[in-house]
Image 1 (cartoon, rainbow, N blue to C red):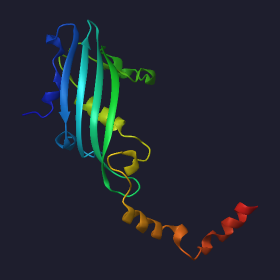
Image 2: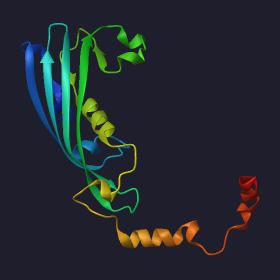
Image 3: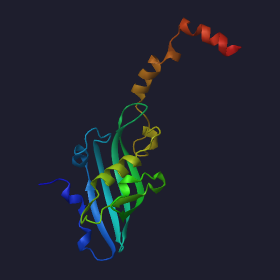
Image 4: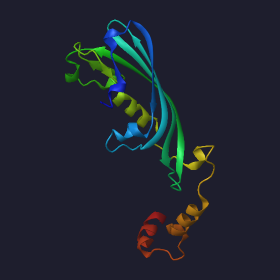
Length: 178
């Protein structure tokens, strides 16, 4: 059985108007993607598929948790995500030849297509939902504070905690003070 078939939308048979699709995403979904930065998650995706005569309006509503490591103490965190991603799907046979970055929220498919698979889009939107900045235990209210034992070890190993200054930096300190 094709594991991607669940994400196929056979739009030819759909009447114009809004249609709802629901997907439960977990670790098995991310195993389908080689080198995925996300391995464990529990996410729901609610897709509103608005079929028009010449295009589709899609709105992906993504919510749940992604299992990541704290950037400070490396403890495991279930980081909450909640995001909406709108997308327009248009029919155009030759659109791949034109690179227009201003149309980033538009996907083009050939007129000959009858099925639209949303698996890759869901994956990309989930990855986009993970913040680029630091994710720490404090950013998740249910987790609380970072692991104090790990922080003690890291503070002990940091260069600022060593009592003997590194003589290699003396020349640079002279330049800094000028």
